[in-house]
Image 1 (tube, rainbow, N blue to C red):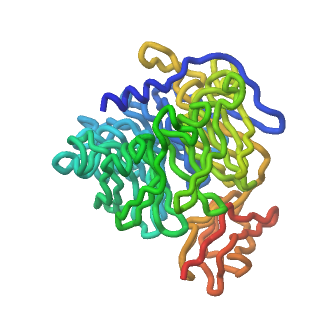
Image 2 (image 1 turned 135 degrees about the vertical axis):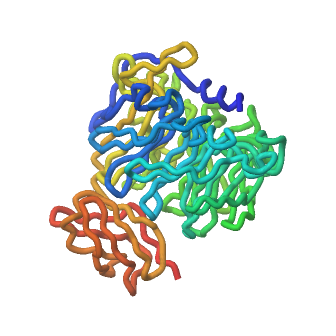
Image 3 (image 1 turned 180 degrees about the horizontal axis):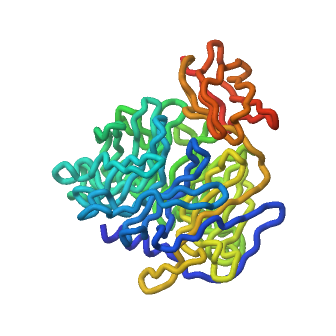
Length: 489
């Protein structure tokens, strides 16, 4: 556990001064954490069905340094929903590094790295109003066979269960210092260990999983594999794991190594991700990999003098409605404190924003998390450091971190949950100003709107629907889903 805490503190970057946003875009610092409402936002935010954004901080809160869960409106009004370590011995969890996922039942689910009944992490459920339930405490089995220290964000599978990873523990290795696991957990809290890594097939999965359109789950390990540089793997919902790519070792890694971010399945069906190090300049890379394991390096960071294009991307990527990929780097850029970037599927990268844009980095610094595009078309993200308020870590002031938005005038859209299902499946459609919607179609087939609200519509997939975009017509706009809905047989 000590080496993990050291890894977190090692990525802090001392604050420096001033950068400028590119024209034709608007960057806004929505909130600066102050310690009492949290600090060190290592995870990004997720948009809820109420239109608000939800996230975690890994330190701060009402109980000292346990971390928080927060809600923030798109305009920046923040509410602390829960402060961890509220129970004796932090049995409710401590240090939530992962983001949240909103399940189809409306509740939010997440993990903590420490705390719980055995001190090495939990899975929890929290209602949008702030009532928290600890569903599972890791290391419940002798030798931590069930895993320990879950760093990655959960994903809800098509079967309704949640899937995730633990950094350590499992059947291989020594006690909680095992190689890590892949697990499944039911909404009720029943946990099943699907796979224990053994080093050769990967080691230390920091990131969570993504369920691809073929039904399999894909993820990364930060180390291990055939060359000890990390791996990309696929695992079936039943636990059959295959390593589809092994990154090379340090010093030989022009394709990158040490991936700690989750993968994204793009609109072309391929997976996209980042490595923290490696690439031709050893400052991290962006890659594409097919579901069968053919990898292409799209971009190697620090290609520009002084790393003005950024370096060391810890976060995954988001595909926006314009088809491009967006992400962050934790360091580098014009002022050394990280960037926001856009990259085309062909590999052309544009730096959109350089942190610290204000004196003292009051706009934030060192973004460790990726971006989310909300249904208003804007991007939202967090920074681990910087912001307007002081947080002292290891004797130095790195700032408490911030929440920000970035508008590129991409326009609004609707988001569908779930993104696939059979005819007759009940689907929620998330968006803005939907209360006056006049019609919903699934790839042209009309559906009946059953529940109206400003931010969400509820419909049933109609008979005759085929795979394609969902479209919502309102008096002021016609909104299209950011991904096609897949009609299952």
